[in-house]
Length: 264
Length: 240
Ligand SMILES: Nc1ncnc2c1ncn2[C@@H]1O[C@H](COP(=O)(O)OP(=O)(O)O)[C@@H](O)[C@H]1O
Ligand SMILES: [Mg+2]
Image (cartoon, rainbow over all chains, first blue to last red; front, side, top):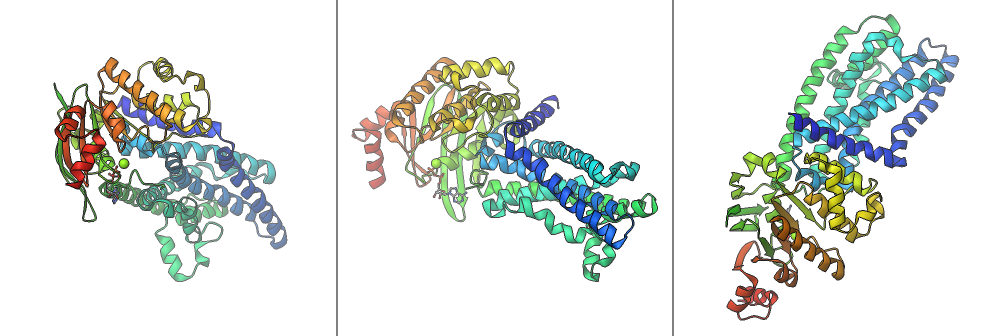
């Protein structure tokens, strides 16, 4: 057990070295989120003045920051995996005593570290620019964020599995897959504006419940218990399915002899 | 001598193609066993099955007397691997990269071990250089340092000198031999360069189209087939 943790940390440290050494990677953690926040933040300020929508800025900026948590959580996993693919390091990792489950565990850890960095910066800027205090969500913030992180993990694990299996063609998923969930996550608008069929889809998307819950807190201040229970149970299903998918896929990849060929 | 790797009827079928076809062999303690054969013979596939990177279609692999699948973690802790087709994260320095692997293998006193290996490979001067700025010869040597960090009992090498110029390749081979003699490491070494293997190996296995076609000490094989070199031997057998 002690060695297990040591190995997981060793690999996590590898990824921290990467960020220390590389400006483009650091930019990826800060640049896009900050730009998003600046542009969309001012758009929302403008619209709230024009339309006189109460709470509009809070809705919008809260949604931006929370969406970014989901996105970073997924990306933290897939992109860290891609780092190994690009640097032809994957075989070094998989011939080491680090087991596949330890590997996934350290990917999860890295994603947490990255998203803590990003969201702290975003939350601080939102406070400075738009006097938006994310802490106004109070205690509810914790389950909201946890649900987004776990959903991001599930999606990230599946993405990683797909890249292992299908190689370069699937790499684009690392950046694109979260966007696929955005429309049905009802990030910037209530689920009610979606067409019926998509509302049904949204029912099974944990993040849709998270964002409904977020808006409920903002408008009524009530604890969105029902939404959070939905999100929680869906997420348990998501994470279990993603891990089963990953381990099934891993054995397929080993059967097909693809581990040495990822990225070729 | 003790058998340290035992392979029995190992087979790998890719979409109906028998890339490795029922091969059996042993690796003995302290020997360099060369796995030679032309491109596509099945060398890499064999090595990857021995490292549990590829799952065999059938057959048995025992390392240190232990069945590979069931004892993966324990076995991997005591072996290592390098090849010309792997590399290391480019933005990290040599020392950072090696530190990460020292920790993965739970090496005690990693700093000292890393410095010692860098000196053996005469690359101590690039300790703090980002891997990006190294030549392919230097990267190969850093990867070999990585492969020796955990003091492995067995080193699996897949065409380790393929991307090196002849001079560095020769130096690397000399060094590997020295390391083997000093530490008694067993090596399973693949190459399509038969000349290289004649020089390096205590014993060779020649494979072609997934099958073992000859096996023995290089001199003995050359004598047996009345050839000039292993290359000769290979051509004679392959054209029979
Ligand atoms: N993952 C794979 N999927 C399908 N065929 C493969 C795979 N890996 C290797 N092969 C095929 O198996 C044969 C042996 O390949 P390999 O073991 O790489 O040979 P060598 O290392 O001796 O050059 C080749 O014909 C190769 O095309
Ligand atoms: Mg090969």
